[in-house]
Length: 108
Image (cartoon, rainbow, N blue to C red; front, side, top):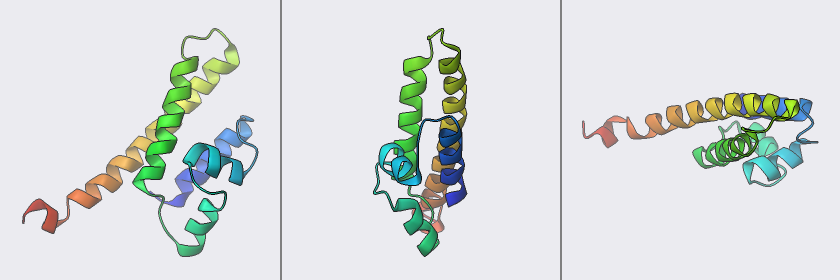
């Protein structure tokens, strides 16, 4: 999955008022330095499985914390976080399969 996934997640979290900036997102939601997305863009790289895992886990953690809340805003965030976590998990699965399914790793 391309950097567009991270940009999409960041945009959704920003529009919800959860993150304030790209550095805030990189540091707080990806566990990376504030210039992580800029570095990916500059070197035309994909986000690592580790970074996607951190983001997925944090989205799931906060969705679970708010899942039983009666607050309308919390319910909206749970839906958003669950959807974004699903996108991260899908990207993790695609990248993981691309690693293990190469002929040399399949024993072919």
